[in-house]
Length: 345
Image 1 (tube, one colour):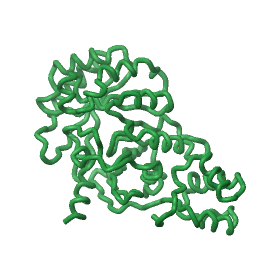
Image 2 (cartoon, rainbow, N blue to C red):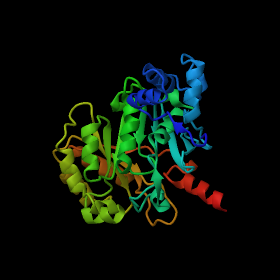
Image 3 (spheres, one colour):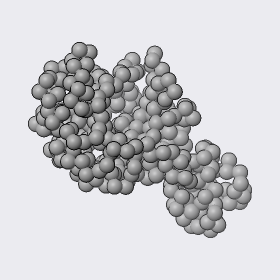
């Protein structure tokens, strides 16, 4: 990142237009910049060929595109690729590219570290180091070598998206607007543990899919796994979701990491059905990726299949998500933790 310069990437069309005016340029230069950024994906202002050389020079005095290539790349034997991206603050975040036949999903981060401190998450062990800017979020897509293959983006990487909602909404606006990537919001899923007021605002201001980190239908146990249960309980989350229509294209899903002997019993299955009754949704059962220093382990295949079959048999559409990239620090936070440790040694 060029020292002292502001970043164009992440600006909305209105902001790019205002930037042009501030620099004494015609308003239409804002639209030209948007086209070069979000349609042609240039990496330098000098490449914005239909803007005059003098005007490009004026822009370049104060601004940079903001594109930053990944600092590290790890590829799994199953084709999953994890990238370590630098941020404007000098920190690093993880992004995971997951190819699957004709589909290709990118898992992006929204924060450096996380305040939620979920027991099973390595990112939470890092502590919170800052919010990503909209440019930091978009750069994970913008500078991705496999960008043209993407079919979906999920905000399920490091951080709690609702805890950085302004920048997440700004990034999704650029992704879905006509002046930006012009994606359907149905290609984007934003996850959350459930944060009071923020979740409602996201549901009101966005048409992207939402995924809720559930992990236990029993509030006391969920609080042990996820301290955020104390701020907005899972029952309150579900009641809020029931106020919205998910019968059409927009979906709500629940992420449920299955821990052996912890949340995989018939009692959990029955309580899940009871909790989700009346809500059009799906449940994704996830195999646990072991992280250092945490006394939890994944459930066996039989337990996961029994849980899936019970939920499906009682009207809750449920899938077992395939485990990907375990050989490349696939669990969020492992690669950036290793990188941070190496820098301090």
